[in-house]
Length: 270
Image (cartoon, rainbow, N blue to C red; front, top):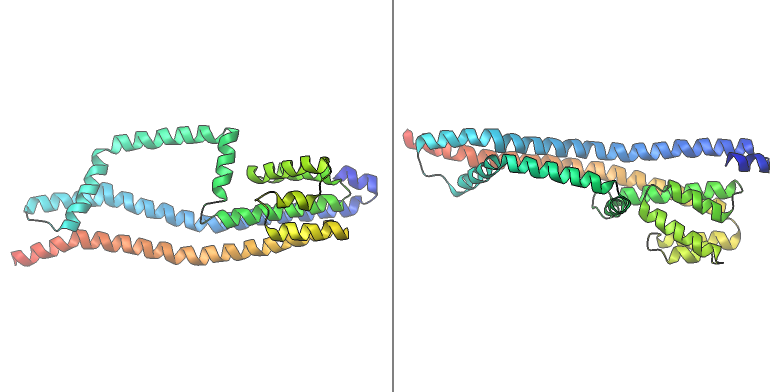
């Protein structure tokens, strides 16, 4: 892009746009990271609480109940049996987790594994929209910037594919690029790819017909930036109470299943 700016005499403008573009990409990544940080922390804390209950607290209560030798409620027996199962098979569970971890990391280093992961990111309920809007905004802004800088559409698509950071999108862009080389148009080929929504294909068609594609694409990027902001705020405000309520239900279930028999035993002894 710098070379194109030098040749076209627009080096200052291109350099400024590149700097703005890079700042925007950094901000987008920060939004996604910040949105996922709190839910990940809460999920980790949730798992830690479960582990402490299963491997430490519940076995302690089991010894207390055994010393009394009284009949326990069904809910308490169920919790004790679940805890006992995990405690007895701890070595197998660790081996299984390590094996899955090693296999998973190895698989994700392959091209097939990376593409599968990118497809999963576009389907997971929590992160799908975040990932989708992030990739769409990146594609539209990059392609618009390259076209505005004087880069040909075919070359611009080559560069855009390399920075998509999602192999589903990258493959779609490369297929579009091959069809354009054969004489097709960008909008026509976008319609053939399920990755691109009607808004993008429609606006692209309008931009191609009016000769304003380099202006239309940044506007699409701005739109998806705003959508990403909305999704980040919605995710944070929705997941926080859900995780807190879930943790509260877990603790309440534990207290009810473990302390209810103790209260009954105390009543009988009195």
